[in-house]
Length: 216
Image (cartoon, rainbow, N blue to C red; front, side, top):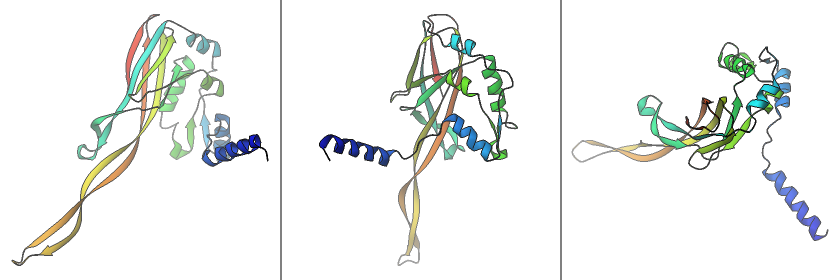
């Protein structure tokens, strides 16, 4: 085995080792759902690709934002009242708000139609899904969509984070010479994984406008 072939074999082997999960294509996801006898609901109107393409054409405006959430605190009944958690290196996706998207969003928010517990899912067509823009945040949660035309847009992202909590664990008791009892506790930490879905509707009102937003 020559050196070049050995290097190629090593790279392929490592790629296989670290490729732990490959996300199925959207059409494959639909096939899986249908095979499991799960109902998929689409908007009734036909998707207009020309309208979506024109809305995503190059303009002079810009959407600048910061994506973040606040930690949920048990002491405040799970409300998001804790410190800010910035979205570090997450994907923010933008869709033009076409009539097709408006119908999709209304269906998607309707729990009587979009309800995994009842095996029903609301989805967009493959063509509609293609007409989108994507941006990756930096470590401070900042993101930008440049070259935007005037229009209405919808952006979203998913922020996963881990919260650290502290507590005191009872470790035992002891009695002293006066008949009293002393309880002993040891401090400990525990962790909770959370996931926040961040979404926002935005409007660029004039060509060249810079719109600053908070995605939270």
